Image (cartoon, rainbow, N blue to C red; front, top):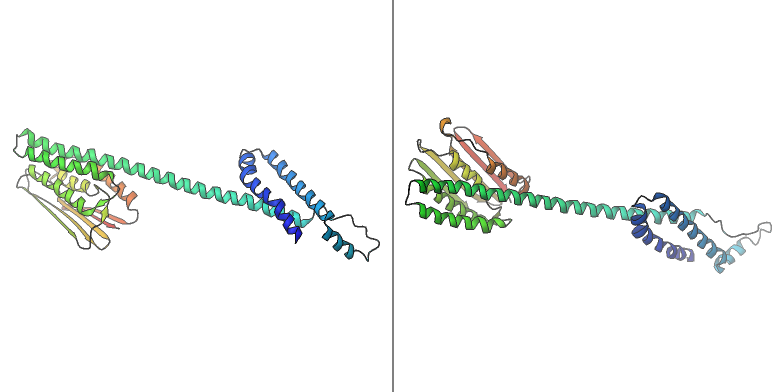
Length: 308
């Protein structure tokens, strides 16, 4: 019993010293020879102390005396210095202390890696979001500029609607998530602003239906698709139709955008920055929980399904 107590008292300081000081300050700095000399010195000191305790312990002496009393030819000189028991216990503590540090360091490294990954993700999302606002503002200002060139009476009302829209983009876009109803209201204001400059050759419809309560979505998520429809799907020379629909069924949000494909002569090439950013945002915000389908036949059809 006493041997276990002695061993525990002797090896407990070694455990903490090895885990918290020797490995981080000696081995981690690649001072391997010094590290090995320290471990060997501790081992020899540990065995020497055990040897001294074993020889001088009264309980041990009495047991040994009675055990070898009938052997006159045996002269006891104390226990073997390099006993396998103490060596095994020392090596066990050595492995446990080093192994626990390795496992702890691995968990810390994984946690740090996850934190860095989240920071990088947040930085990328912020960058993508910041690119949406100028892109949206640029297209809207172009619309108002067209009205101003013709001295249209609709210009003041357009500026007023733009200020309302910009208030939303400045305040709500800072949030990670916004109410779907707020996003719908914002889209409706944007469509009204676009309708001011359009002629009766363009038919626009926007339907929305939230069947089971409100929900939270990423801000400015649908507007790039809507911008794209207005930019490429209308013409002053041809009849054109654009339709938007947002619906929520259970835990799924379904967005649909359909616009006519104009004749080639009236199509304007664009960089596609808004759509590219939106696709990337969807990948980051809704990994494996969204489905984006873009079809181009007689119409350009965008269908986005998001599972919350």
